Length: 112
Length: 112
Image (cartoon, rainbow over all chains, first blue to last red; front, side):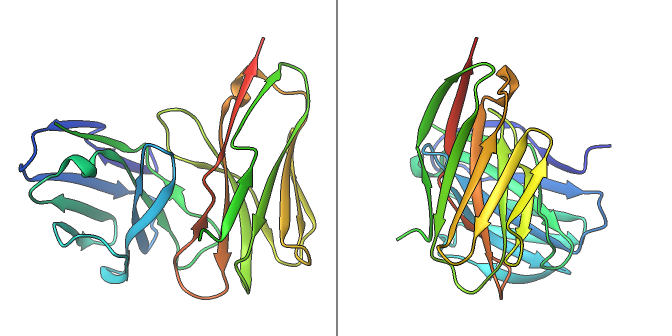
């Protein structure tokens, strides 16, 4: 009965590969987010979708492409992985702009 | 320049002691200010949420205060426990838009 779930929890891959991270929420929220947390623990917004429409797209390389097949899912596909992509990626959801965002457990991506 | 600054960057206290974490922000106008707790290897979890009109909010041993005039907030932890060891993140939501402004967090270690 996890509210926001992400898979995989850990992802180790070689430079140049393409990988995807999946996120699902069962809270009935209509807004979902992807954050990147670097080694200094700073959380940065990457994307946000509201009702499957992109509403936030920060300065992120176009190697990163979010996909929202429905309101409960927001997946993140990354092409041509680079060393600097190594980080923990968090998915979150909220109802509209909502008082609170609920975060997933994170996916630790390591690019070798 | 980050619009949310937290201090100290890290803190070590003995179990049972109290401590206070600080957050200064420049986000204006803002809708609400949140404190999140992030355990190692987990996603952030909300502790308190205060609107701009609230001065204080408690959640068990956690008490947050907000001074909208000086743009300062603090999180006071009473009778600390080993399980309080975590990163505490101050987050400010602007009045418009979906993006949140995150501080870099204070890393708290409670020792026996």
